[in-house]
Length: 227
Image (cartoon, rainbow, N blue to C red; front, top):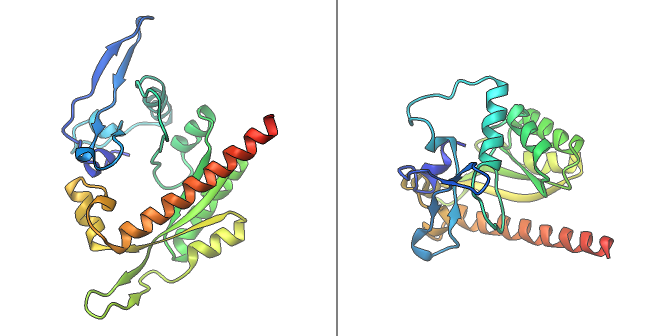
């Protein structure tokens, strides 16, 4: 996603290239390190490669080529996780990655209302057809915490993400509330989990813990099968 660079505070970073022994050039991904507060994050995005005010008006073939370069022509090195941020829907971008990368998991993000569930339900079924080993749903913008009374306000309905997960037989990882601090953190280029003790920060940490534990379980089960 083109916004990832700004959200991680590295939108002004230069993308350098290194010549490999076989003559190819590999891009060196900029590093977001946040003063050592969390593990540094390598970042690569179209946001580095085009002016920030210019749209990327490409047909499917060019999009496919760009994605393959972002995957194969970047010196990623050894990673704990590679997280790929997709646009909404079931377009060429997603199909290209699923066909070229052995994904461990697909996490589908939805909002609670029925209109959103129509699209995210298709995304879940696409991942099923592509035989992604683990599929889960997260519900974003689940509710707004009133800054005056502290009550939860269901702006977009309630429980849509959980209903979708139950209907499709996949895991529901949890809810992320609307949190003004999340907007402030994104604009400032700071992960919300470093921005303060907020409802969204707590939700993201809980979701991440659940996902990591599930992936570790699946890895252990796969290792047992191969023994």
